[in-house]
Every structure is written in C-alpha cells, then in structure tokens.
Length: 68
Image 1: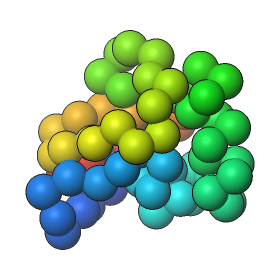
Image 2: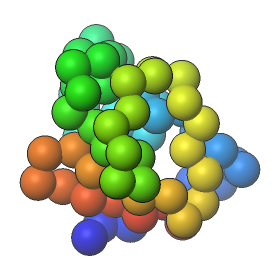
Image 3: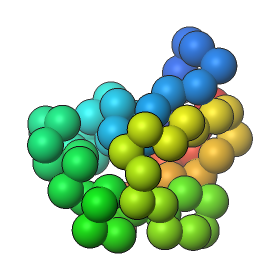
C-alpha cells in the first residue's frame, strides 16, 4: 500500500488520482472513475468530485493508496 500525503483537509477524487500518478490527465481520471474502476474504502465510487479525506483508502487497478 502506498501513502499519499495531502496538506488540505480533503481533496477531490479525480485530483487525488492525478496527484498519485494513477492517472496521467484529468480525462483519464474521469474515465477511470466513471467506468467503476476506482474503489473508495472498498466501495466503487463513480463521482469525480467525491471528497477524499485523511485515512481513506483508494484502490485503482492493482494500486492501493492510503491518504495521510
């Protein structure tokens, strides 16, 4: 599991994917999220603007990130 440090209280899911290099562009992040390929705390999340907070777990493919 990789860790991703954020300096704000929360971050949008699509921005987090770009920050973590799980998506190269915003369009790629949008596609991953809307096609059901992203899990937030074990549940499929299809909203790009979903707020992600510290201690949340995001999974994309075979990569898992813990937000700290």
